[in-house]
Image (cartoon, rainbow, N blue to C red; front, side):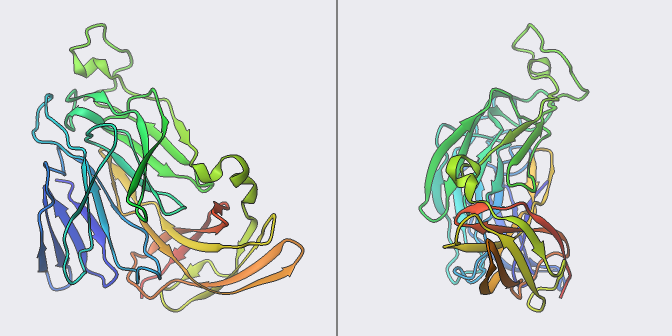
Length: 329
């Protein structure tokens, strides 16, 4: 149940369940490649960890790299959980897992989100138990940042609200993260029980909502945000459509990145289908005052058609995202 799925640039699927994974051709209904097992515990339901495809950029030739963290060993309230993570390039000539560990302890139901500076945010989940009703305890409250370029972890914030089964985290258009939910009960439970051993009532249904602000939107960094962003074309075809983007910058841009982002979808504390692609960029021009224009094109790789968001990132600070529609090739 609930395998991890990622669409690769050639249109095949990366499919992961438990500790095993493969590349699957949907058109041929055929397994193309069986990949090495990920060391560690069970990684999918009911001991779900988190899975994300790292950003696709021209620098990495838009080659997929999958990162999976967390998991557990049993379908019980006392299940141990896993703090290990693996990174795998499934389309490489020699695919193998590169291992690392989450700081601060093991987790199941850990949520992961791609951030607009290329790092990955890991949050939520529990340190004991598994997915289900009244089957997890010891909430994991720290927010962790992983930098794929340096292979380094850091702790970046902490909540006092448990986020267990049926929790969610999604990026908003302004680049902040919406965090909501947690209903580890068969029916909504509104009040915490005085008996702490009763896990059904120890963590009642959570109606509070939080917003997480990444470091690139704090302090002086936020002052560098581009504004008045406007796209010439809102319907994009990979490898074909060239669109001009205009924006205002508080100062002369030293580094401009344009990102195509799909936030994916969430169910049962499992986040699937996130995609972040660095768009091909050309002809950055200063057109007067604080206004600039840049031409961009979606690289010619397979992307699921549908709604995406384009973010303009100037010197590390993103502007408000713009909705676009990506067509199939």
